[in-house]
Image (cartoon, rainbow, N blue to C red; front, top):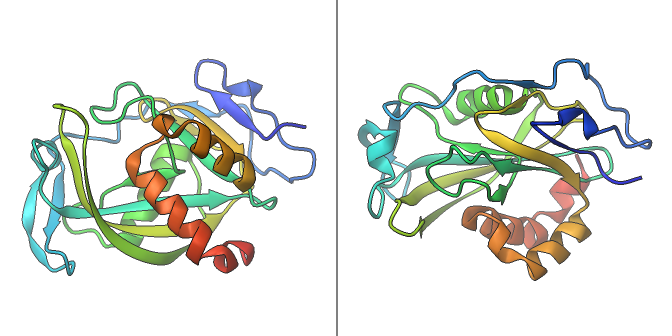
Length: 214
């Protein structure tokens, strides 16, 4: 049986894998709550993660971007399949690109731990323990639309729950095996966000044991 997947327009086509015990109720599998705001205050930092100030999210992503805190979450199921999302077309940067389970920013007054828990629930309706792996800095331009300029913390976790997908944030979702993801990344790298490609390479080379322990 194929790995579980779904589209927001027909989300119930994503049926559970026979070998995984998916928890949760299928009757509420998407929502349209607005959870992203251009004027939300992000945390500006230096390369050592020292706080320098705060700025609106929209301004942080203009031009070459202003370095700010961010995080990326990778959620696996019991079969070690990774939950991927295709970003909504509404996204100003990298809309309709495939990416990791969830990524966003701590807001002013939030810790990384508070922000990761909040965002995973807002986008996918999931709650699970997460483990911090590493932190890295990157900058990526999206044509003339703007840039990501982030000091990004990477987390992993495990869940067998069916996601309750926020249709304002996510266009499609799917679970995919690590080997199949490796193959698709090699064949179609243009489908994926730049931060996800960097993070996945690092996870596959340096954090195999941590993923196996989930």
